[in-house]
Length: 431
Image (cartoon, rainbow, N blue to C red; front, side, top):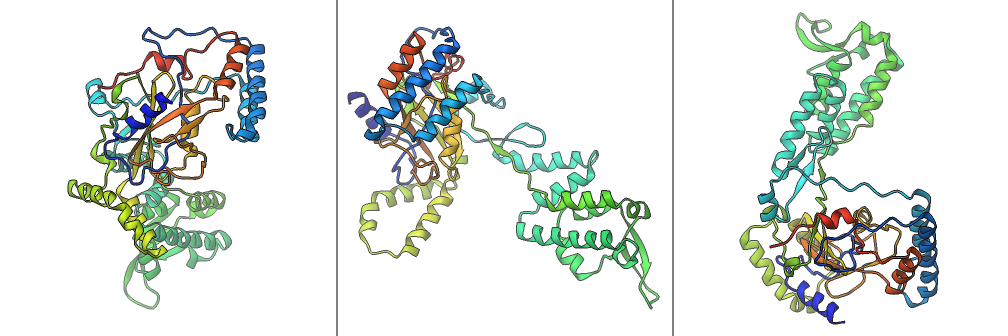
């Protein structure tokens, strides 16, 4: 109880704590025995010991389900079965390579992204220009794919993209259905539909040219005037299968978005665990707005006592959501080591479970995550914002000591850490 009280007391010191801070994350990597000496790698238990350990854990869980101490039977069976069938360790997420050592030390919590085209690590302000350049480079080798990427990615209004793509698809459908009809193979540039629905999209003209359309000046019917048209080449008309494939690729396109890097980091036990050094990327707020939010939180009880409609409350919630887009979360283990990861504020708690399991020695071992005040986090379909875990939060890892004792007895030794040993060995120190 003393340790739990100390943990709760420390958690009250969060800098720039998110609104509400009602609850905290659920699952995280977990070392269990504190040691000032460098951790030693235990000998891997034989297969029989692993099976016995899993069976012991299942038995213990069945006996404690009535106490509300365990996860659901199906969830535990899934973890155990996975462990027994694969006997494989999950690959550790690679550490981001963009920061130098001094920079990592000074900005413990920052926002980085990975380009899905090149795989490069990017800062927030770099991602859009980098993705644009990557698509442009792709245009030299695969113009059709690049033009589709442009339409879906570089045009921000997805409703207009949807209408434009559907219109282009209709043009292609008409050609595929009636390839000998000349009127379907020619598109007038000044056509209102073409201008308002297609030409406004980045990459649309590149797509037409990549699939075989050519620009030509043609006379208007019954007039001594010429206008610019797109005309499908005779070679393209002969390859309707290719045209069908291009049409399907266009219709099934998706925007290219840089993915948020989790940036997993392990920290040694320290008193600075609850101090989060966040960069400006975590906030969509000015300094003055942050001060105002602090005053609003101080007066929260007064506001809650007022009669407010549901619509008023929902509007207030939306305003708060816009302030925070990201959150950095730490999980503190019984031996004091911490695992840190970065998430979107609106991600489901389930993403944290996946993140934690990647770093555990025994990813089938049942455990809980506790919030700052010791409350158990359970609903994986809640977002981090729903649980009040933005823009930062410190969680506590908890494992049933009796289950752990059964596992250790079956394996014949006491584990030095819940976390993978290579992670603990490379732990950083917070200053």
